[in-house]
Image (cartoon, rainbow, N blue to C red):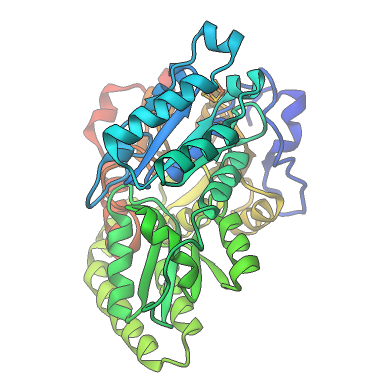
Length: 450
Ligand code: SF4
């Protein structure tokens, strides 16, 4: 048992699974002084919109906000690379005192002339919320002057949690939806929501749907184009991955255009197969889709199963800690680790809600630590107590794992290997095996010598 003293304000956000009902104090702002691993509202909106590759992304604020999120996901594009540039209005003292609207207008017009984007997103940061620039008015003016959609993103960093940033991004995208031509779209068609093409996953998933005979109208937002987003209201179904980021857009599209949505995960064999079968079931009046799905799943699982069994022999009994952005990803990770014979001893998320945590509790073994909006002290203490062999997280969790001398798997922005789909599960297992068994750990005292 650890003797870690949890901050009083965080007591309802850290639980040891005793298999009884608990209340997770989630969906709240981070406790001051807790050194939260969670990103700000602006960062939340930036990660969602960033992969729209032919749009201009202008961060209205001091240079630090833009630097902090520069190329934040490294999301791959099959064409334009404009999204990879991080433009900033670089607000200084003069604008803080006299207002930044004039500078915003000038930056926007200069950048649009220079790069000819299909649309522009203007992100409001903390300081813009404080000085009160009318970002909407400037965007309306430039829309008129330049003839492209210039969309404000109300993502002032202080006004909530990262989840509020997702909501701001969904509202921004919704301004594009419904403004394009939908003729020629197949009745057997979908939008893929919540897939950001960090390591080429969107391309793999699109290929599955092509083989099933399902048209993908748009991916939001991996390898995305403004024109495709504009016509996305012509799809018959929205398929939403990940719990937090794009659910709100799916709900808005259902209300405005009557497009139903389903929630899926493309991580792990079980969840990927289920996702594809769920989509096929939606088009059950086209039996050829179900037939093609069965054939696809059989072939894909057959191709990776023997190797996964070999990994399982070595990984059986190893222990993993998971700390990710959305809880939906954690569900899939727990299942995938179980498939490899591993147990999850610590799991947490930045943005999970109470239903997510109820489900996590049901999925986890007794005594698993479940945390919301955690910090390095809590995470490292429980990793030590549970003697985890592997930490799965993102860029902020990587140094924790390495300092403790245990394996690490990046399941967030910085990886270059696709982890989605059937092949992605093979990549994941390879990475887990490689890092857990790495000979480098003999040179690093486990848990920092504790
Ligand atoms: S928006 Fe605010 S909290 Fe976010 S990076 Fe900028 S200054 Fe920091």
